[in-house]
Length: 99
Image: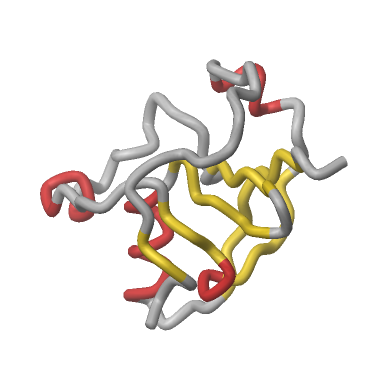
């Protein structure tokens, strides 16, 4: 299994980070794909295969740590691409709401 679980919502409280600039203040760190719970159930194949899918966005996925779990908020396609390249770890920006 690629991810720890597949979710369909964001179970954590609103965190106020809404722009790439907001997230950019958080340094990337390594996360294991098998520790992530997705917040989206569907995957757009066209977006997965697009070569320039991060051209206007953040290069790093956004992850929220809440109650000891890691939720993949943004970057599902990048995470799946990492898995397809046989990688079990990727770099992501992790917002820790447990602190």
